[in-house]
Image (cartoon, rainbow, N blue to C red):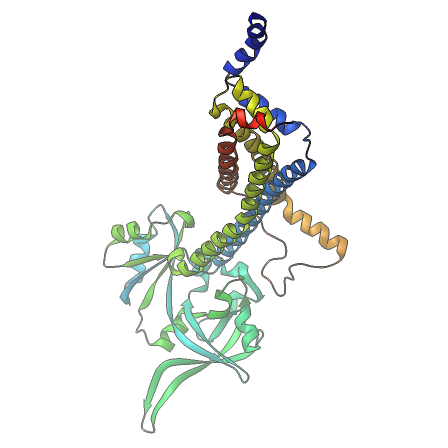
Length: 427
């Protein structure tokens, strides 16, 4: 009897060590299983987790890149801030001089805007017509950098020139130098009756920013807009450029300016577009998370099979005094090791691909002699990517959480193994 107790003493000491589940769990993970099918499923779990994390990080980074490109290009045409009054601004130069003294405002330019219909012999398109001062507007927006044909300087007062977007020019089938007819939502009353007001304009430049602005905006000179829209010398408002377009508080600025002026930021006017982009990113991320869920189910399957194979081992541990929680922790450790290893490798490969995916696609284009993004069709020539640490952290956390949750059911089953029954039927 004493000899038996002496033999069992080292084992009891080992059971008292807190890292026993870690030791056995890691040993089961590294060791070869009698049933090769279990090892195969464990390998599939690891590969699926790695693939899911990698794909999710890369896709989110590419979507972030497109979001950045769209915002950057839109800000070439859309002002950071619009300051206006419902009745228009008559003494706008005084207000502009006061606003530009603020440290967050770098430049101010007046504008007049209204709706109109641009027509040619073959097509017509409703647009937002905006009257600007070309010289001042270049300090507020980067519209001159977005011009792909013609010259913004050709937009001179009294000549009734117009600058249109590339998609609008394609719809109307016009190029620089062609004429278009602008119909206004106003009527001319004559003895012969009421007739719509229209004016023939000459296309002096075409811009391209790669967004909906290309199909719905036409720019004319401010003085021409005053005549066409009969504003009696007033302007509709002021465009302003901010030092940081992504940290604009339009409500606070409106309160500080006062004078019953309203202030809207560029993000407010395009809220629906960016909300749609955010929704698309959320939906795509959720759908791709299914790959991680599949990996979690594979972990469950492999652990359930492992519990069946190791019933004798677990029964021996229970007989030697190991509590059910210790047995359960062994399989929690084993499942978490598979999941966390997949998450780490997937995060590393996902971050690497996200950083170099543009170069990889350019190399493939040269190798296969094809062009993924034709600049004449798309507003980009290469695949954009923006890796955000928050995305990596969220995706990795989801992977680790699902891996842990996948171990609970098999671990619970392992903890409920009764030593007597497990050893009774063992041959």
